[in-house]
Length: 217
Ligand code: MD6
Ligand code: FE
Image (cartoon, rainbow, N blue to C red; front, top):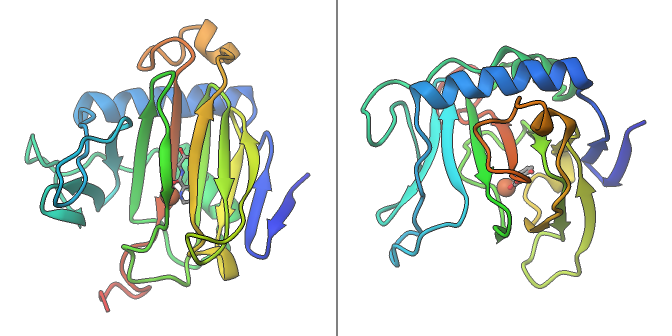
């Protein structure tokens, strides 16, 4: 059962069943082989993020001392990002209600104790498309607010297999991850998440970057 947490912010608990979670985990493992995770850094200050990141798809989101941007190649290997995981792409087709495929799949890897500060996702030219988030591994507390950083916030727990669509009137809301819960997923116990430390978490966000039709605005 999907829940509309706010207009355009739709939570699909357990969207990926055990078989889909295992398939997605294997697809992510292959991406990580081809595109090793990097530690992003804050623009200007160079302060490292606690989360490690990589990407799949034609474009990947990177952050370093010179800023946030989308690039067609991995910043360290110089190679093109690997193809979008098919299971993630199928989730986009089922949930995004958008006529064009995703261009970027950002993969965030959380070790226990890591978090992600409140932010907006606004580096995409096409804000008509939602961001689709998929979670695997340890559960996390997702905090979301409004269009201003100081707006009141609420929280929802994202579990392994959950999908979250952030679109419509919520496309630019502030959001972040406050904490992980040290609860191992079955997938983790079965070794399907060998790319994560025990009780780690992986989140995928799928995005459209350029305006539909291909031209960046
Ligand atoms: C995370 N997610 O769940 C971080 N952004 O680990 C995000 O920052 C996010 O889940 C945009 C839309 C959905 C998200
Ligand atoms: Fe985000």
